[in-house]
Image (cartoon, rainbow, N blue to C red; front, side, top):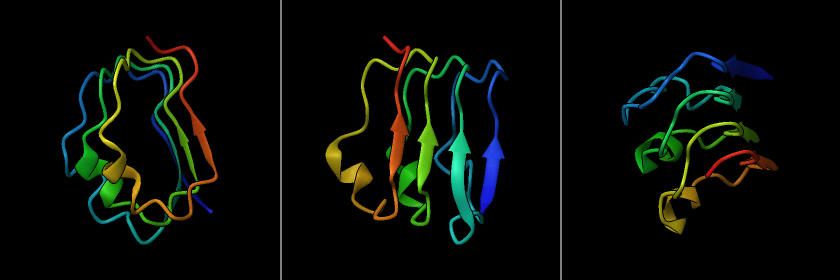
Length: 84
């Protein structure tokens, strides 16, 4: 399993190409405890093997529309706890 932990980094924004090149391998992405307000739909679209996404402890008030999750067929765990 390829796991990328970027928690507690005070990250506020993600560019649409933030994880380009990792789509074929990234399975667990931890962005918890940052200052994210949203997740660009393009970020999710490029991660088809993602099985766990931790967005807990951010400032996310809205998510991209449902189509942003269409490519996440492997997603088993989504943590949105402690957001707005």
